[in-house]
Image 1: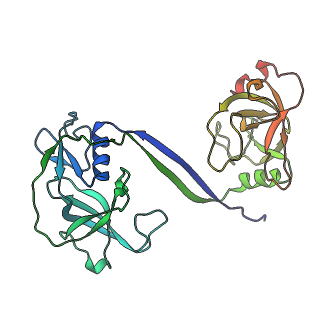
Image 2: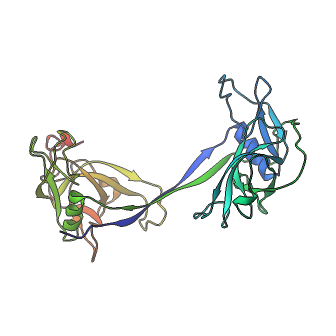
Image 3: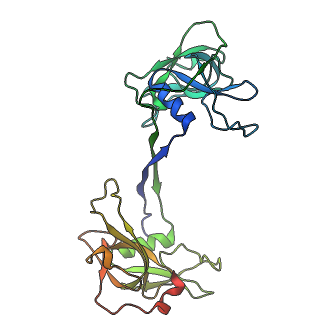
Length: 314
């Protein structure tokens, strides 16, 4: 039996969001060590604020300032913090209802251990030394003995140099272990070959194979070598440089129907100016030393494929 393949994979991208007036005021307020909520039609103060009442869907714009002290409504202890979590030492995830608010804010509490935690304990905000207009401007909560207050005061939401947008990094780390069909496909790529699997029912050849026909739903086992040449079916021009990808923009990423395959796979097109890539362009893979997959595809010099030859693969 061949060795089971596995590899660590990371999916990471920055998510950029524009802020409306409510969220802008909330995050700018945090930068200024001020916590703002929004008041609903029935007088409740929601922290963090939302733009629409979750009960009535009424648009909300009336801002109110609440205290930086509050009460823990529930908690869970985290004994082993992960990368990029708010604290590097064990901490508690907490829901804190700030004085003057009617809803609870999710954050972390710096405590010596779970024995120091209890529902109903009084806490206060510990502000980050450097604040930029983000939820992380609240470094954490910390225990604080004080009497509860229930007042909130109106606030205009106006600050100098308001925060109008935020960038939130999104990242997923996982280990990928392919099955039989994918392992055969990857092992063949290491030998500079491309193999798919043929459906015993519809006779279509799928690349990369998944072990079953997506159309008929039956298992596939017959391996078929395809390519190496193929036809560009569709493509896009990439103008934004990806992090950790040493490719100059603009470049072209395309769907390529390899000869003998009934499903197009994707790959980068090189060896030709980006504005000369076109549907029907005939291409072949370019391999680099020691690589387990083609670096890119380049034109073969053949005449373009007729549209009818690949229209079913668009």
